[in-house]
Image (cartoon, rainbow, N blue to C red):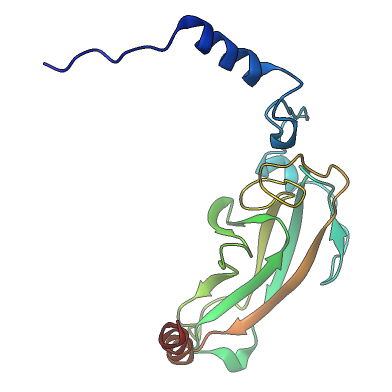
Amino acid sequence: MAAAPALKHWRTTLERVEKFVSPLYFTDCNLRGSFLTPERLPYQEAVQRDFRPAQVGDSFGPTWWTCWFRVELTIPEAWVGQEVHLCWESDGEGLVWRDGEPVQGLTKEGEKTSYVLTDRLGERDPRSLTLYVEVACNGLLGAGKGSMIAAPDPEKMFQLSRAELAVFHRDVHMLLVDLELLLG
C-alpha cells in the first residue's frame, strides 16, 4: 500500500493561495480577468436578424463579440462532377451552420479554412444554398495581446480575409502535402 503524500507546511500552502488570488501577483497572466456579456445569440434568433453586406477586407468585432455572416452561394454549372469547398478565413473562430445545424468549425490558426459543400456535385444537386458562419472574435487559444496568457486587447478588431467558392483538386492537394513533408 502506498504511503499518503507528505503535505507541505500549512503556511506554505496558505502563502501560495494568497499569491494566486492577490491582485498584486500574476498581473501579466490575466488570472483575475473576467468577461461579462449578454447571452450568446442562438442560431434561430441570429438568422432572423437583418444582415448588411460584407466583403473580404471588412473588419468586425471587437474582442469577445460574436458576429454572424449569411453566405448566399451559387455554384457554377461548369463545376458539375467536382468537389466544391467554401474557403473561409477570418481572424476569429468560425462555425459553419447548414440547414439549421452546426456542421464544422473554421480557424485560420488551426489551418482548417475550408468546408466541403459537396464531394462530387451532381447534375441534379441544388446550385444555390445559404449557409451561416458564426464567428467568435477571439483566437484559437483566447485573445491575449501578444501571448495567450496576456491580458486581452478589448479594442482589437478582426478581419475577413477570404470568402470564396473553389473546386478542390485532391490529387494536387496530396502532392502538396507530400512535398511539405519531404521538406520537413
